[in-house]
Structures are given as structure tokens and as C-alpha cells.
Image (cartoon, rainbow over all chains, first blue to last red; front, side):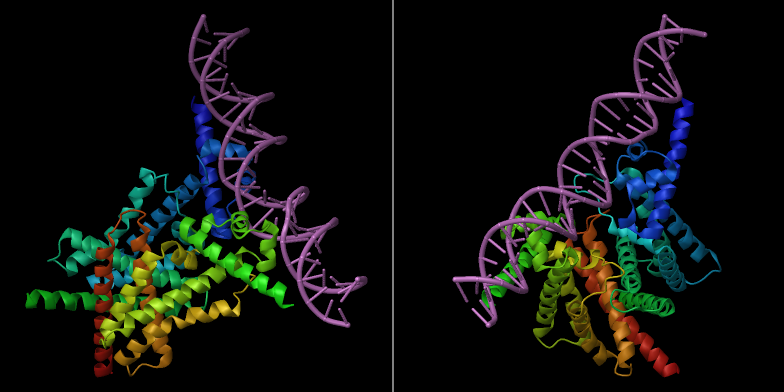
Length: 208
Length: 208
DNA sequence: AATATTTATTGAACGATGTTCACGTTTCCT
DNA sequence: AGGAAACGTGAACATCGTTCAATAAATATT
């Protein structure tokens, strides 16, 4: 029983790696089961013994991408002992850099939309939540009076705003903005957002 | 010459309207040429006499969506004489509301990615730029010392940040956030961003 | 060790989809 | 009215993801 399962696992790992490479090179739309089968050395039908369908395959690649993104964000906050404000700016820049360096894989995280009737598997939902903890910790230091729920909402808003700047900044659909300029804008707006949030907090706390 | 062209134009308009309805109901992935042909009463091949390919069709629908979005943003700033800060908050909320009310059509604006070798037609590029003018005017009032280029960059950053909040907020891929809460978050973060940017501006102007 | 049973692999086939094309049909200009 | 140009038609093509009966392999049983 071990021989077959072992080979199966090896093939599945190869399939996921091949899919990852293919998405990175040709984008999510360039992912074809027949090319994958040829690359890992099996018939196209065999792909469906390793994976339920391409949706699952994309989710598995996405899971790997999220893990690498998590590592990149961890690395960004590990060096030195910056203030919460600078930590958040670093995280935003690290997110921007990761997206730029892994453009197609990063895009695949958001382009892919699952069917409404097929819910996300548990392992896929889990690692999405983990990303917010990088933002949560500096925010908690900045806003000690806010509840965990409020902090979670603020973290999501902050992340979404940075994500939007990165997404449209790297789109280059209309105007190509150079990466250094984008990084500068992101860092500036993140600091502005934090300063504005802090000021609003102080005003509310002092006035009420 | 008028009879045929007139009919052609009517059919093309019907095609675009049918495509718009279909995207609104079933999403961008639910747009099928055969269904379109059946709906407007012609053979599937005839679609390609009205439009080069589905890419152009999607762009034409997108153009209409952008026009309606422009109207919505214009309406948002027309009532009363709010401060630039409140104008920007109103615009952001109007953008959020439009996205929520036209979810699939709004998503199609960003989901659709054209081939690298086929550049966007002029009429499609033009109306994308127009959107920023809504943000540009209040920004110019807030930051009189900034150059038009700087203002354009700030406008794009601000728009991108709001877009990100709306995009991830309406995604509901992980957690369903109620629309009123999202609106509150957006308005709050927009005001915080502006306050932060103003403070940064004052500090830089005073210190340098 | 030999056989039976379960499982995996194959590659052809299915259905859907965007797009093209040869063939009639309609429309337009003279 | 008649020829030319444009148009509409529906079948056909290529390309997908996915399925499936048949075959090969591996495992379990005696």
C-alpha cells in the first residue's frame, strides 16, 4: 500500500510545482491540464487522480504563495526594532515587493473565484487569516484602547488599502508607474493613514 | 447604405445591452457568444460582424459602466457645498455604493485583462482617465502647493486605496462584512488619509 | 506463491466555447 | 433591373476541462 501512495504523493507534489511554474510564467489563464500532464509525465486524465479539479490545484498553489508571502512579511518586521508606524510601512513595502516579484502568482490569489456552491476547503481558509496578524500587532500597540474586533476591522481596512495601491499600481493598464515611485507612494500613504487614524483617535478620546 | 448600417447599429446596440445584462446576471465568465446570439436573434457567427471579438464587447460594456460610474460620482459631489475633505469622503462612498449596486459589471472592469499584443483602443483608454478628475479637484484645493503631477499621483493613490477597500470588502471570500460597516470604514479611513496627508504636508512645508 | 480483488493509469471521447469560413441571401449603387 | 459588395447563416475547427471504459499494476487473500 505504501508504494502506490508514495508515488502518488510525489506525482502530486510535482503537479503542484509544475502548476506553480506555469502560472508564474504564463498567468492563471495559461494553466492547461494537458501541458501539466506532459510536464510531469502522465496522461491528462491522471491529473484528476491527483487533484479533484483545477480549482483545487489553483488553491494549492495559492496556499504555497500565501506561505511565501507570510515569510516575506515576517522577514520585513524581523530586522531592527522599529516603531509600530515604521513596522506597518515596512510591511506594506514588503507586500508591494512580494507582489512585484511574484506578479502572476500573486494575481492568481485574487483572480481565481471559486464556484458559489463549492465552498473553500478548510486548509485554504486558514492561511488567509494568518496574514492579518502582521498588521494586527503594530496596530494594537498604536491603539491600545481599541477592542480586538475594532483592531481586526482596522487591520483589514489598512491591508485592503495597501492592496489596492499595489494592485492598481502594478496593473499598468493605463499608465506604467515605476516601482520606486510606487513604493514611495505606498510608504507615504501608509504613514499618512496611521497619523490620521491616531489623530482621530486622540480627538475622539479627548472630546468624548 | 443607410438601411443596412442602421440595422447593423441597432443590432450592435442590442448586442452590447445583452452582454451588459448577461455580465450583470452571471458574471464575466457567464458571457457566452451563443447565448448572446440567441438573445438578439441572430446566428452566433453574426456576432463577429458586430464586434471584432469578445474582448471588444467586454470593453464596450466596460465603457458604459465607466460612464454610469462617472455619473454616480458627479451626483455625489453635486449636492451642497461640502469641504474638500467631505467631498472626497462622499466620492469614496459613492464609489462603494456603485460597486455594491453594480457588483458584477464593476468587477468586470478589473477582472478583464487584454492580451499583451493587443493594445486598448483609444475610446477605452480615454474614459478611464476621466474618473480621476473627481478626486483631483478637492485634492487641488487641499494641497495648493503641490504640482499637477504630484496631485495626479496622489489622486491615483487615494483612488487605489479606496478601490482596494471596496474590492476586498465586497469580495466576501473569507468573511462577509455588512455594507454599512464597510461604508463606515471607508469614510473613516479616507478622512484619516486626508488628515494624515495634510499633516505631513504642513510638517514638510514648515520644516523645509 | 498463485490467484483474486482493489486500485491506478491510459488515451480516446464528450460537451462547451470562441472563432472562422464557404455558401446563400440581402442590400446598394448605377 | 442587374451586378457587386456586404451580410447572415450554420456547420466546422481548435482548444479547453472533464469523464470513462478498458487495461495495467499493486495489494490482499488463501
